[in-house]
Length: 104
Image (cartoon, rainbow, N blue to C red; front, side, top):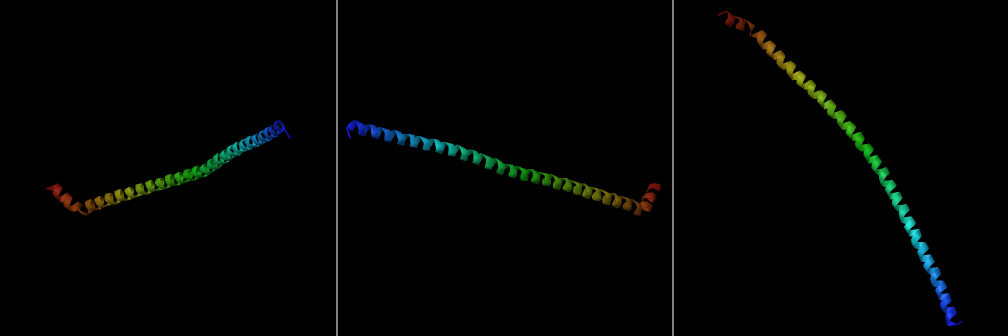
C-alpha cells in the first residue's frame, strides 16, 4: 500500500467519523428540543391544575367572606334590636315618673 492510498483510506475514514459525529450532534439537538417541548408541556399542565385549585380556593374564600358578612349583619341587627327593646322597656318602666315630672 502506498502512502497516497493509505492517506486516501485515512481521509475516507475521517470523513465517515466526521459524518457520524455530525449525525450524533444533530440527533442530540433534536432530542434536546423534544425534551424542551415535553418540559414546557408538563409545566403548563401542572400550572393549569394549580390555577384551577387557586380559583376554587378563591371562590370558597369569597363564599366564606359573604357568610361572615351576613353573620355580622345579623349580630348588628340583634344588638340594635336588644338596645331598642331596653330603651322601650326603660321608658315604659319609668313612664309614671316621667309623666309626673311633666305635670309639674
